Image (cartoon, rainbow, N blue to C red; front, side, top):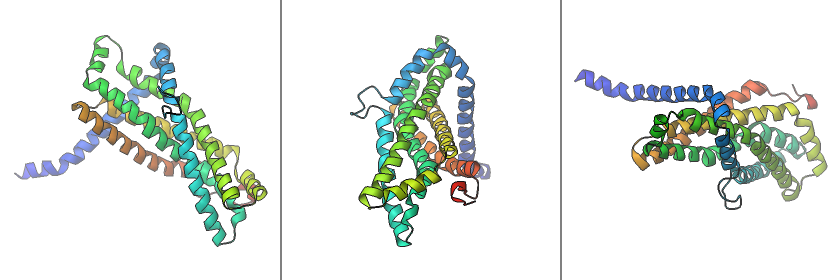
Length: 279
C-alpha cells in the first residue's frame, strides 16, 4: 500500500518529464531533418508558405495570418498609445511618448503579439492537421511507403514558417508604429514633430534586428511545440482537440518565459539609450 501511495504521488511528476522528453526528442528530430525537407519536399514547402501567409481563402475572409498579425498589432499598439500618453501626462513628460513608443513596440509588444497570432492561427492549424493524420493512420501509411513523416510534416512547416515570419513580423511592427503614433498625435493631441524626434532617437537598427531575432525564436518554438503535439496526438477527434489546446497553452507559456530571457540577453539587465545619453 505504501508503495502504491508513493507511486501515485510521483506518477504525475514522472509523466511530466516523460512528456517533456518526447517533445524535446521530436524537436531535435525536426531540426536535424531540415536538410532532407529542403532537398526532397520543396513543393510541400511552397504549399505551406502559401497556407501560412494567406490561407486557403481570401485575406478578407480571415484565411491568412497576415491579416491577423496586422489587426492584433494595430489594436494592441493603440491601447499602448492611449495608456502611455495618459501616464506620461500625469507627470508632465508627454514629450517622451515617442521614445517609449519606439522601445515598447520594438522590444516587447510587437514580438509577443506576433507570436500569439502565429500560435493561435498557424500553430493550432498545424496541430489539428497533423493530429488528424495521426488518428486516421495517415502517418502510419507514410511510414509504410518509406516516406519519413517528420521531415515531410514538421520540417516543411518549420521552413515555411521561418520564411513567412520575416515579412509577417515586418508588417506587424510597422502597424504597431503607425497605430501608436496616430493614437498619440491624432487622438490625444500630441505634437507630431516632438514624437517623431524622440522616436527616431530611441529607435536603432540594432533594436529592430534584436526584435526580429525574438520573433524568429518565438516562431521556431511555436511550430515545434504544435507539430509535436499533433504528431503525438491520440484518442480520436477528442484527443486532437485536447492536443490543440495543450499545444496552444504550452507555446504561449514558453513564449512568455523566452521573452523575459531574450530581453535580458539582448538588451542587458540595465537598458541603454546611447542617442539620448542614457547608459
